[in-house]
Every structure is written in C-alpha cells, then in structure tokens.
Length: 197
Ligand SMILES: [Zn+2]
Image (cartoon, rainbow, N blue to C red; front, side, top):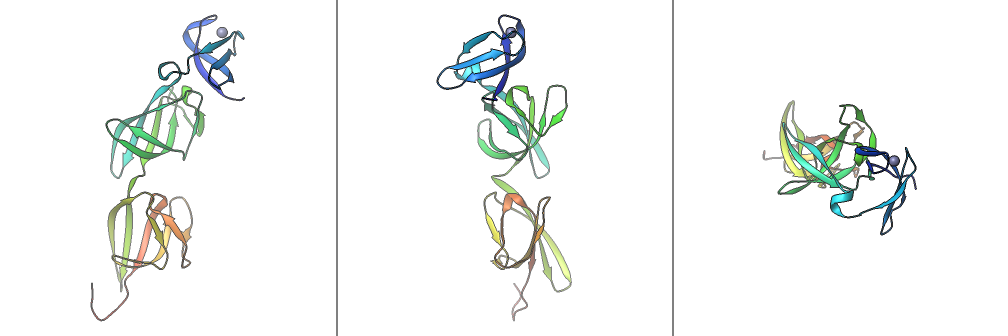
C-alpha cells in the first residue's frame, strides 16, 4: 500500500488536514496518521472519502467550470481522462494539476489538488488544412474525440495525406491512424478530377 490521503486527525490535528497512510482499503478504510501514528477506520461513504475538485474545462476558445468527484487517495496525473460533471457529463483530459497554493504538478493524490485544468475531448475541434492546387484553406470541424482518421482515406474535402499529432510526430504513411482528440491538424489534398467539388 502506497496510497495516502489528507484528512483531519482527531488525535493530533482535529482542524487541519494531515497526511495519512492508507493501510487497507477493502470494505473498511483503515488509515494511519503520518504525524502521530494513530490508526483508525474511516467511512468509505461518499461524504467521508470523496473530494470534489474544481475542473476548468477548455473547449476551443472558451472555458467553463465543472467538477470531478473522486476518492481522495486516487492519484491523478497529466493526460488522464476523467469525466467532468455538472448537469451534463463530459469526457475531458487533464492538462494541469493545481494545488491550493497555486503550484502545479505532474501528478498528485486527489486530496492535495484544488483545481484541475482539462481539455474537453468527447467533441473536439479538428483543424483541417485543404490543399487545392496552390491554395490552402483551413477549416475547424468538430468531431467526436474518438473519431479515427486514417492516412489515405477520403474525407469530405479530399484525401488525408498528413496528420500532425499534438506534441507529437507527423504521420505520413498510408494506413497510419489517429483519433481526433490527439490530432493538431489534418492535411487534405484534393484530387484533381474532371469536376470540382
Ligand atoms: Zn495524528
């Protein structure tokens, strides 16, 4: 067990949260205070052991607030996909993890986190550059995040011939595929046929 949570300790720190080691998490949750070593059992119920994190979701040019309820011991890291909620649920990908003091971390147990920054991924904007002869036009098209694009496939505007991955390589080989949520830009070449589209 290497899980840790931060909760109040009735023995040594009744009003502020201190680190506890999670000794057992099966059925009953047994924790030990890292400061005074008092061992006790806490409720696994929603109220006692879940935390609600602020999630700032960005989508295209806007951002809005959602929340994410999670076990305080759960370790979250950059790139994790979670479901952010208010009235609706949406899949988002964590892009930054912020503590109450404003510092940012690559990973942390939920109990230590105040705000998650995330990108909406169930519907993402894919930038499509269409080359037609010497001109290039750019389109922003929304797609489901899991929508797959394959080099060589025909799309609405023509044939996909390159896919630039976010913070990643450019795919150019026929048959290589990527999901919309991972794509920075798709390059499409229109075939010169008798009739223009
Ligand atoms: Zn204690």
